[in-house]
Amino acid sequence: MKMGRFVVDGHVHSQRHAAGPELKKRLADKSAGRKKLKYSELVQVMPQIEAYDNSERLLYDMNCYGVDMCILMASYGMTNEQNLALVEKYPDRFAALCIPTGGYSVEKYGKEEWTMEAACNELDRLLSTGKFCGIGEGFPCDPKVFYRKKRISRTDRIDELMQVMEVARKHEVPVHYHTGFAMGYHLGIPEALEPLWAHELASNFPDVPIIFDHGGMACWWWEHLVDQCLHVAASHDNVYLETGLYWTDLYYKPLLDPNIGAEKLLWGTDWGASIPVYSQPGHKPPTYAMQLIKEGLVTHQVDLFGWSLRQMRRLDITQDDLNLILGGNAARLYKLKFPLTRMFKAVE
Image (cartoon, rainbow, N blue to C red; front, side, top):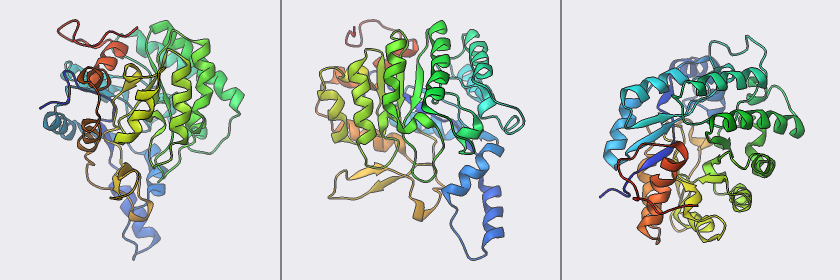
């Protein structure tokens, strides 16, 4: 039985980096006896490696677990064009966010000076086509900052984020705010460890939906960033949490908060990312997502749909609330097509 009436994963990467050949070459050059590929080495090669279409595996998992639709995101080395091609091929199964390729493109990386003004102009052009339903993953960022080769102050970065919010307001679309990082590598997105910065964005742009990527739980078991995301979401009507990497008990924090609740949660797993799930039976939490540095890169397609849906299946809440989290909220925020009205609980 499907988990809900309309199941939408709000955070999916249908593209994957063909990093194996380059990483194996580095492995051979550095040490003939070393067998494990490191996450730190992966992040070094990602800016120079094009991503390939991994939708065959994605569609298999969607059919396996009853996932009706996915919101596609591009990131470093990935392209809007590949995502859009998948949307056009399967319009009932996919919708896509957009990013300015100047920040991530293999073709442009390190070859031109980056500015937020140019990034916002590109976002404006992309959203003007009407083919994208939001901005993300995360806010655009100077590649030199993104890959930790340059620093930026809090004030300057928030000023940059405000420019993106203006574009989102113009096109009436949500914008994604990335939180946390995956343990194996630390990309230098300044706001990733500072969810409280979003108070300024939400206050100045109350009409623009802000969705916290990962809801503060990108990996590991530390709830500190989750609590900060909850503080922002409880304070502003336009702030939402993506919760697909939450374990069961963690869901109850926002569900029990009278200023958050099911109407502000969206299921989103980061499917396609190289993030395995760690098991520690008898401890809290018993399982959680984390890149395992000592074990090296995961080489198979991690089953995030299966793990995440099991966490949700254990929740003792109404099916109407589950339906909101699993797809109703996504349908409302991304303006997704659904054949019937009054199938989801009304939300102010």
